[in-house]
Length: 313
Image (cartoon, rainbow, N blue to C red):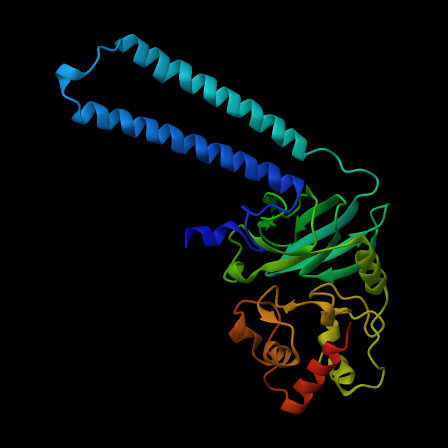
């Protein structure tokens, strides 16, 4: 059972990038060193407890105190400190000009994701799912709109706090394609445990195709019952669907929501049935979210809304 945590899409013991690999090496060295020292101390305790006093060799008290209590820990801990400081510096090497720059702003309880150009201007926005190219460095600019959150993708990098009124930065890179689950690692409210996101590492050609698609406005049919319901029931007041509604900042951008695997920041699978549940019973599924439930809508309207959102690819 313990080994089950050594791999998977949210395991720091299964590194998929240079930053996570460096942290993994520190973990292995620290763990092995602690186990060896613990075993040595335990053997000495057992020896002192069960070995007959007449058979114990004479050991200098000064040697034990100076050698074992001062010299040994000073040398070992100093070496580990120097190595740790060097590794920390390596993790903060500035990315090159080819780095992907992404701004993530945490909200209670979802992630606002904006892809930036070389001038720091947003090209487009998405939410709760972050695509990155394999083999290229990514620099995240991180912030928060409400309380302290923490951004953590265990397979790719360490965690870093997202503090209101302050900008922090995190650099990472994925060395192999795959899905990597991120999580808020700082208690931020009643739905802290349901504040997840996915990092999708794509080969460069697929990433370029994804990027081009995300820049485009929504392609849903203009005459659609769900589109009319989306506008009529105030959804556009909080959610942006480029090509359908004006820019709104209170809720996640839904322009290409159907291309995401999950809704509600990792709460429900993105299917039409679950979309109906999310719209009608969201307060039951994720109590404390800012979006009210729309259980007063009839089934036909709910299904039309879900069908409309399911076409936003």
